[in-house]
Image 1 (cartoon, helix red, strand yellow):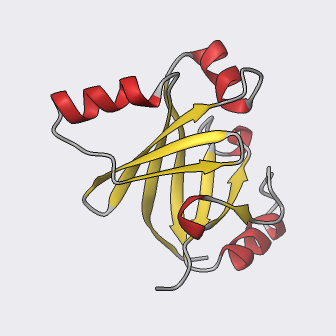
Image 2 (cartoon, rainbow, N blue to C red; image 1 turned 90 degrees about the vertical axis):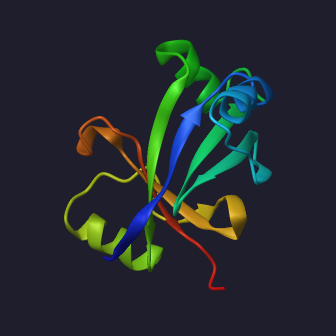
Length: 134
């Protein structure tokens, strides 16, 4: 498995527009891409070769809403860009790593994503992401 970089840090927020005000007005950073991924509203704030991904749930019973209810707003996951997500998942499964997703699913920016269980990643929800070839 080849990890290319940290793709993004996922930040759970209750209100993307309110969060955007802080990043824009206080830090001088701008959202360059917004997208719905299933029931999640996402907004990406680029910083160098990585992004902050603001994630807001549109379902009050959804995974991000539950995360915020339990832990509050803040960093929810770390995403690593991999060269070949299918190969990465096979390697990790063969090594006994507990996977949330055994098969990659669609993500933002036309990517394919899969999550590793935080019980095997020192409590950090970990996402693998493969972007389409440019």
